[in-house]
Amino acid sequence: MTDAIVVFVTAPSADKAADIARTLVEEGLAACGNVVPGLRSIYRWEGKVQDGPEALLILKSRAPLFEALRERVVAVHPYQCPEVLRLDVEGGHAPYLQWIRDSVRQVP
Image (cartoon, rainbow, N blue to C red; front, top):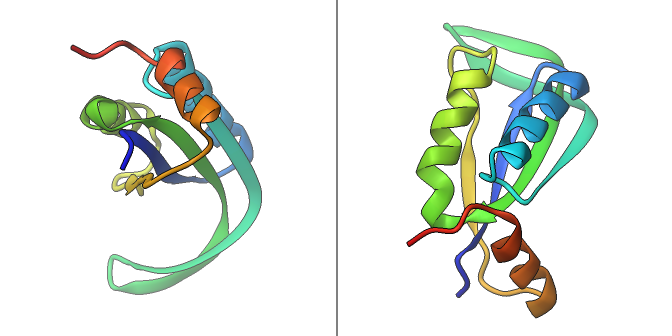
């Protein structure tokens, strides 16, 4: 197991997802953010089934930074209840995992 994580965040548009990614990368909370436009999300919200366009933001970071990353996403996100899902990375290409470590805030 590594301390690398992948975090999924949906956003109302690719531009908003890019804004969130830029903020997190600039602040050292994420090494990278990939914006995947063109999602169609179907979900239940406030008792009704919703169906609409979204974009997916895929962030790469480290486990010790997750709570700070989550809090920052919630602070800058336009949704009342944004998706912030953490997936732990069990393994990967060692140089890429090192790049993630080197690209985010250092943690004690």
